[in-house]
Length: 183
Image (cartoon, rainbow, N blue to C red; front, side):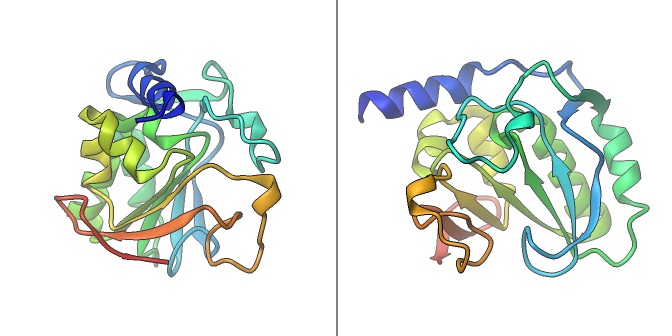
């Protein structure tokens, strides 16, 4: 494991956490989104990111003290009022630094709304797996992960759901996190 991977894993494991039962968001929930996954999707915009990718489209989401906290229960109640969605996507910021809250919402929408669940992450699948714990448990609740940091020198707007060539769209086996296919 590289020194960089060790730093990234530490960032995953030690990021500031919201109050128990809450999630820190950067803005309002979005619905009818067609660019952050297959079909019509709700989007949960998380706040806080240690990656600070050059050229990031959401630098206002980096500050761990920015945005606002809201209960995960309230998020679920609001998502239930979004008709016609077939999934939810977690964007950021960095969802994997709030894995417990994201997993709670992911599990609820799957069980109660029948939605599929996707997430973006500036961390790689391998880094999340190595970090283990709550981050790995959240990953195992996903149908798809778009992983890897945005790299400005590899920017490619022709890629589906991704901004740079290093990022991968991974379709996952629910409950195990096993990669089923990769784009």
